[in-house]
Image (cartoon, rainbow, N blue to C red):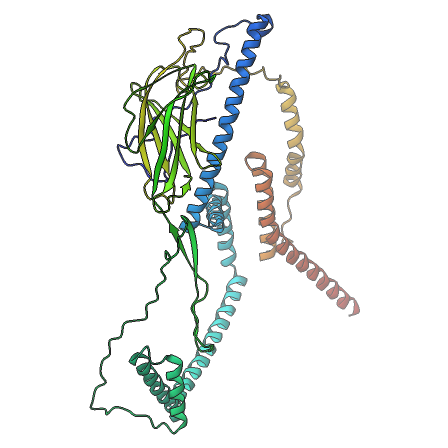
Length: 548
C-alpha cells in the first residue's frame, strides 16, 4: 500500500531558486460530503442498498486515512530524529534550550508593566531610606571600615611582592634557574637531532646522568653559533579506509600517552572526532508497468536503465494500477542498500499539480511502488490526463542523490457523474459563524445597589466625623524610621489589595505580598520594640520619683 507524503525538504538541502522538485504539493482534501454529496436525504430514509454502499465507501475511506496517518507519523518521527541529530552536530544541548527559554521568560517578566511599576516604587522607597540620618551614619561607618580593610590588604600584598622579588634575586634561586635552563636546552637539542636514534626520555636520562657526574657536558663556544636544524614536526596518520567501512556515521576516540609511564608528561585522552562515511549508489533492476487490480491478466512491465526514460507513454484507467520496483546498490561493493528517502512524484502536465507517494523496501531490500488508480482518484482530484512519473532518491550518506523522470503515464478516471465529486477549495473563504448569546440576567434595581454602597462607606464617614469633632492626637506618633517604614509598607499592602481587585490575579498578588511582608515585619518589630522600651523607661522613672 502507498501513502501520500509531503514534499518538503527531501534531501535535507535548501532548495535553490527555480528548483521545482517539491513545490506546489497539493495534499488530498477532506470531502465534506463524506460520500453523500449534496444529498440531504437522512440516512434512515435511504434505501438499504444505498445505505450499505455509503457505509462501505466510508469504511474504505477510513482505512485509507488511517494508513496515511501512520505513514505521516513515521515520516514525522524520522524528521524529529534528524532535527535532534542536527542540533547535536551544531552543539545545541537541551540545557542551552532550557537556559534560553528561562532567559526569555525572565526578560518578559522584567518588561511587564507590573514589574516596572513595582520597581519604581521600590526605588522611591530606597531613595527615602537612603536620605535618612541613620542610613547615612551606617553608610559612613561601612565606608570607613572598607577603606581600612583595603589599605591593610594592599600592605600585605606589597609585602608579599617584595618578598618574592627578594627570593628571585637570591643566589640560590638564580643557580637553580640556570641549571634548569641548561638541562632543557641540552634535552631539546638531543630530541631535535635524530628522531630514529632516541626519544625524549633517553635524552632526559642522559642529561640527568651528566648532571650527576659533575655537569661535565660538552658545550659550544660562545663565539660559535649553534647550527640551525629544520626537522619537520611529527605527523601521525591513520588511513581510516584501509578496511571496508560501511556507510554511516563513526565516532573516533584519540588518546595520546608516552611509551613509558612518567608523571611529568600530560597526554590527551578521549578526544572525539566524528566521521561520516558516504558512498555512491546505482539503481538497477528497474521495472515499471501497468497491471489489473483483479489480476485477471499478467502485468505489462518495461525494463529501464538509469537515466533513460521509457519510450512509450503508459496507459492506465481506474480499473488498473501502476507498479514499479527497483534496487539500490553501492557502486564500490555492489551490495544492496536502502535509502532514507525514496519517493515517487506524479505531476500533471497541464495543471502542474504534484502528488507524492513513498516507495517502501521489503525484506529483500527491493523498493516497490504500487498505486491503485481507482482508490487514489480522490488524491488526483479525478483529473484525467497525462502525468509525469519521477523517482526521487536521497540520503544523508549518499553522495549522488538523484531525481529521475522514469516515464509518462496517461491516467483515466471514472466518467460516471455520480462518482466524480466536486472539488472543494480548502483555501477559499469559509462561511461566517453566527452565534447568538443568551440575554444577560437582570441586574438589581439602582436603589438597592446605591443603598448597599452607602452602608459600606457609612462606617468610614462616621469615623471621619468623630475625628473632626473630637480631634486627632498625633503627638504620641514616634517619628522614627521604623514607624514611618511600617506605615508606608502597611499602606502599600492596602494598595496591593486594591490592585488585586482591579487588575492583578491571585499569583501576582501573593508574589508582591511576599516581597512587602519582609520590610513590614522588620519595621513592625523594631517599632514595637521601641514602644516597649519607651514604656519601660517611663515605669522606671515613675518608680524612682515614688522613692524620693
